[in-house]
Image (tube, rainbow, N blue to C red; front, side, top):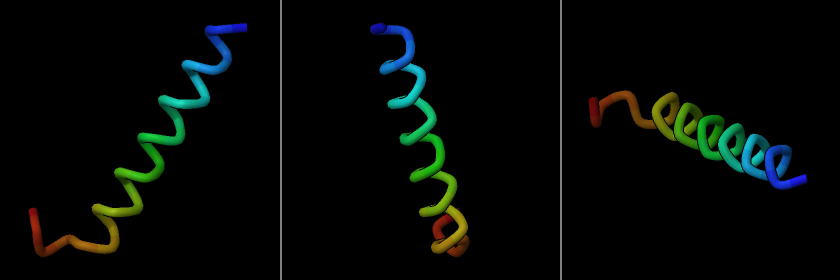
Amino acid sequence: MLLVRVRWLFRTCVSSILSSLNLTPAKL
């Protein structure tokens, strides 16, 4: 289904953004 793929992609993007923010808190 397209909804499952979009939801997986959104979750992957969010997790990658959160991990990058956790790795570089100085940029905030």
